[in-house]
Image 1 (cartoon, rainbow, N blue to C red):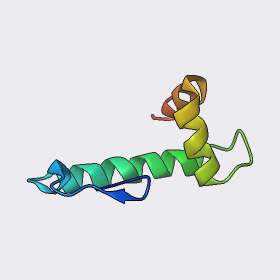
Image 2: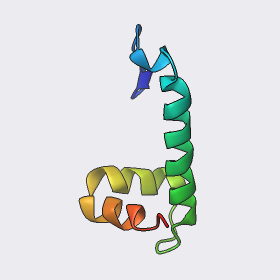
Image 3: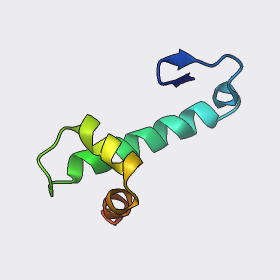
Amino acid sequence: MAIDGITVRGSRARQGYAAENLATARQIALNLLKQDTTEKLGVKSKRKDCGWSDRDLFHLLGLIK
């Protein structure tokens, strides 16, 4: 597991179905970021905005149907 470029050994994300579940969650998040057309920003910028602002995060989660 990498956190800001740092690799963490012994991550529980590699046990059982955790890796598949995390991959699915990441794919869903990426799809939501791509669907958002309210601002003309790149996916990287939108991801950072959601991390910094609850308003942006809740807006993005509102796109789930």
